[in-house]
Image (cartoon, rainbow, N blue to C red; front, side, top):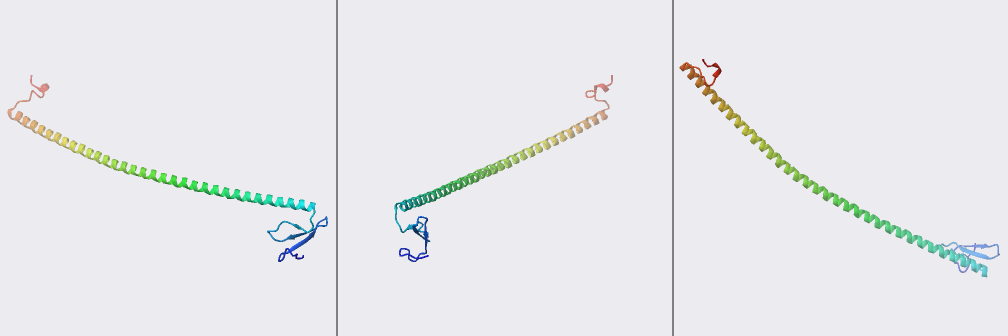
Length: 171
């Protein structure tokens, strides 16, 4: 390995091709194109082909990089939109659940009011029924007293009631 005047400070490999042309390849990532010391039409065509191939590869690499960049951008936009939909959905769910809770609370209040009204109604019915029972008992007691008084009268006067028991009357 030797160092040429053009390639100072770089490591260079000298190779000879089958046509006898000496080529120098530099071990630098920036200089991937082989340089030749002899110029003829065949080497010029090879160099042009290599340059065209390198240009093509460079263009394809740029296209791949652009494609990956655009795909990443599209994926990020889709991710943001997805997150926006998730946030919207969660917001709407929370709103619906809050509305449902308000309705349930209102129904519970109405139910409590209705239950209280029904209980008051049942209590009123029970009170009225007790009053009616008391009235019936009072009337029964009064009727028993009247019957006992009449029976006492019949006993003291000595005759039997014909009006009330016609089947037992004397003939």
